[in-house]
Length: 292
Image (cartoon, rainbow, N blue to C red; front, side, top):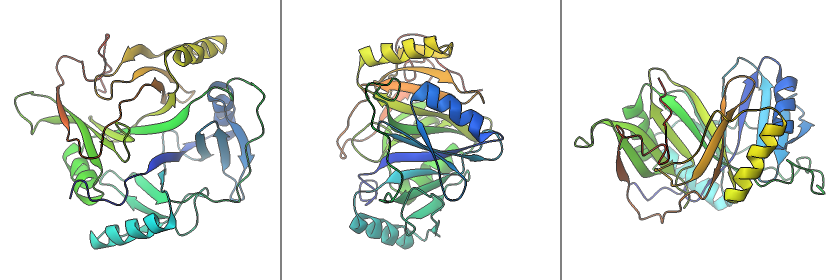
């Protein structure tokens, strides 16, 4: 069933961040990542930039109520609905105000909500930009990653239930393929739109913006330097995904990745296996990031 899901192709479109003070967090994302704010009818803050969208709502720090994958057509949405119903999945009502009302949502074993649907056509448009950094800087919302204490269940859900395509696994013991510690999945040809790292607790890990290359990585780093936002990790190159990267932290301590050159894989390509003990899967150039 691995490559039969009608969810392919789908792209990460947006997700929601909760914060005790949404306006303050939104101000950071506008200055740092290049978003403009619109107020939605339900009171949420709608942030949009060049290839990136985000919802910020009022709630507990580090909460991620949902993340949403954009489908290509209503026919695909109907096929995904039928596919999930055939899997015995209880689909939830769409929680995202950015997607059409009949979009659908599912809950994974850790409680993360994935939405699959079509974007509304009546949302506010982004203002025209005349080379206003960082709004003018390329940075498409590309993937989201979680940490989990239930990796085996998460792998079963994303591969057997949703039939996402596995791209890479990182192993605790390279000689034991049952010792998976990290899993990367794709919903189109890009190496991963979602991933899960084994950890002592289930929590948000990071989200990433895909930019246009090494010089754009430089420009983003210079931009953050001008804001006195230090690089938290990197620069480096991931082994799994082969993408250039660096990370910063937002005011709540959540990680934001700027990425470029992410690997593209045909749908028929099977997963690869990495030794988790040498750190090459997460950084070919230097130090890794230990989740615990």
